[in-house]
Image (tube, rainbow, N blue to C red; front, side, top):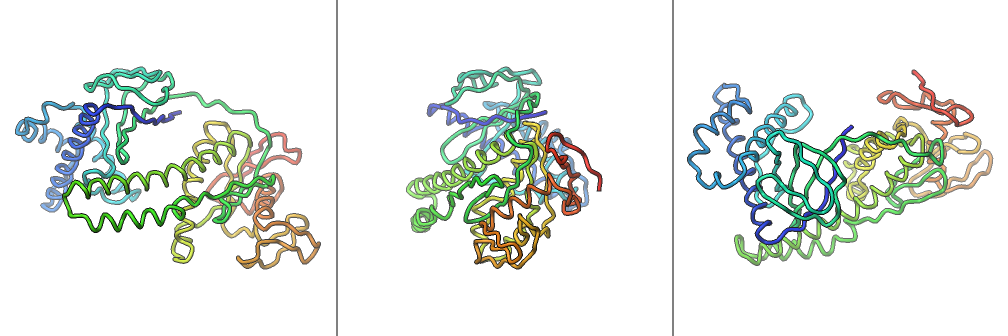
Length: 383
């Protein structure tokens, strides 16, 4: 199983300049290759990454002397990534590759000519670039390639490596999770993870910086300074959101044998302009993505309830169903008189999908796993 470790690099000015040159090299080659691909396609030819790489190596690269001072491994990975991008595009899994712009998603990939690289601690030797430091120690790993990327004015290293999954001891057999905007996640055991609403809280600052940027002359140093401030502000929003989500998903998958989530139609919810901003700020899809891969790390099971399953409208005590408008925050059962927070009530109903017998409510896109009545072991159920 593969796992990636990403951490910030501690670079001096000279090292930052070398990183920027290699990122610019990768961007230049990508844009050249994409332009050639488009032109060949318009003429009725069938381009490929290998054909373009051979042409570039023999006829284009010798004409640009500045590229000889940089690692040749960079441009070779560019053609590999471009070929993979078009494969995903033709398979309907992604949009058509786009041209890259300076300062946006700057990155490049390196290897050691196929040799294994060993990393550990806060000092590591990168191929061609030399020794660099990190702010936090890397795990003792072996890898054949690495990726360097820039966010705002910070450089990061990402290393993918093989590891053995280690299932953790579970505190509870199953847990239900109700995702929301007001509270990011309400758990069936009563725990609540608050929504930091990072973007909403930063909107004034972002708007002010965007107004400053609009007033600056294009190409000026002052514009670049404001642009950097804006990038840092956006990155801070991302960091706050990611920190909250990582803590939530790690706690869920490490401590519970089965995690039950709703199969939310996020793309449909985003079409409602009144709540689209709040839903995007909550990053429901990112929560789902992290739960899925972390469940493989820690030996837990992910179960998705059908998006039409009435978890909010069903009483978690007696099973009675009743209407629940969005503005009503407390579930007051008309049948048994039970009074409970609507999100907690929904989370309990989701948990019972794993423990109870209502297997038909599970989505047919995921093979469900339910617990036996004693909650002691996992049992596969075929619908």
